[in-house]
Amino acid sequence: MRTRPDAVRLSAGARLWTTLAALFLLIPVLGMRLQSTERLELFHNRSLQPWPAAAAFAADPAAWFRAARGWLGDRVYPIRRAAQWRKRLLLNVFHTAPGRQVALGEDGYVFLTGTSNATPYDILENICLKAHIPAAGPAMRRALREAAGYGQRRGIAVDVVVLPTLLTLYPERLPESVPPQYRAACRAAAAGDSPLLHIAAPAGVHYVFPFRELQALRDDPGFFPQANWHASGWSVQVARDAYLAALGLAPPAQETRTAAQAPSEILRLSDLTRAQPVYELHNADVQADGDGEAGFRTAIAALIPNPRFITSVFVNANAASGESVLILSDSYGQLFAPALAGAFRSVAQITANEMAPGDAARLIEQTDRWRRLDRVILLTHDGGAFRVYGWTQSLRVAATRLQP
Image (cartoon, rainbow, N blue to C red; front, side, top):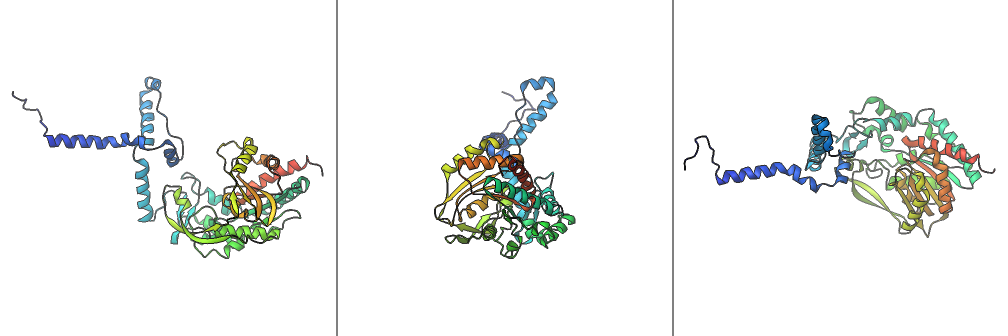
């Protein structure tokens, strides 16, 4: 049988390599099943694009194909792994941050300066510019008066704790890539140019901004973990002890502190890992109260729009104080709560970022019905002090409805 002159006959080896090449090119599609939707949404920091409806093809074929490419682009394999290796290369070889909202300082310092690539400096703006302006002094004094008035009428002590951040404790570590106005403002706050440092609390309320206490110990790289957003370990312990001293209480005698290594909290947001020195607190008397937390969540659930709101409850049978405490806080309260539980019989904490500020009084009342409260702590980092102002306005309104 004669073959056509223009026919091409592939050898067995060529057919094998062609098949392997085709399979290799199919990996990005076939491998999509190996990636969970939850992990992909975390990677993209948004919901994944849906597959376009068939009816949309007839209306606008070009738009349909664009939507289909978007669906594929969100899921193509191995998008997470490839992006991770690229970020590792940039970070470890070229000292390049994984996003515009992250600033890399020298000696392992990593700063979260913004909430997204689109707003790379809004966190710096809030913490170093807005939180420490002159108007913050009168605002905090007014908040403390409102807290004291509510506490006296309600029969529940209300205190305010404000914690410094990495940005105000280590402003000289900010790289020159950060605009100079932010670096200057952070340094001014660290040098004492902040009205939050000069607040005298009225009778019936305690106010603690333990900046000087933390600043005195900041040279240890694990004190305030140098690549974390939240204070933890030793820094939380020092802040907690400053608050306890204001109450006339001693630090927990059974507590120990040990040096350890842990991954960077900030870099982990970009799916990267880097070990750093930290300190861990241990207190065998402090126990998580799972049943209590379930009851706490049920008591306050109607006030929080996001059903995945964050809470914790701790108990301590050997605490120096028999008080039951509620910590109404931003995310800084999550690591403060177990440390504080070393000194109190019961501590419940809620991260209330998504709660309407005007519901603060209702949350306290609902918690008090669930478990009788003796004390409430309104706690934020310094850039979140505006939350305290909103919460105490709610307390002022509620106080007017209470009998004097």
